[in-house]
Length: 220
Image (cartoon, rainbow, N blue to C red):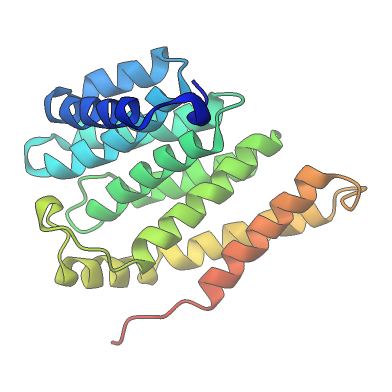
């Protein structure tokens, strides 16, 4: 139902339901719901839940399951049409959280495979998939630049500094190169001024590039 017709009591009940669900649901069940549900609010909650559950149960989850989780989130965003922006944001944030959590112990898999997947999104003929790739880069930049900490997820200050430094050694440059290459390709398209979507996409890549170029590097 539209937000203006949902009572505060109903909203509280829904919040409690999903918070309780996160304590009981498994990753595999989350991914099934992600594929099967058509309800944007459910997809938003499940998109959030995947990241939270993976980080919460990090020591208990096999590396392959970690990788399946974040890849499913990315593939879902890349292949689903007309997703609400808040659903896309929740899924990409969870994927970025998982990547950051696994950058030190390698549990999230080969980083080269990740960057190849991003490259495929950015070079896809679909502008929508290109936009999703740009948003994922933004989510990664935000995660690795943010010093948010949560002892429940083993995200400490020391972990953040080590993860950020590791990301700076390779990932940051790769994302900048891909962003600028895509921006150059978009700028060479005909009638870019008259195409609102392409123009907004260029603005997003400019913003991403600016954020990377103004990066606050860790002290060596």
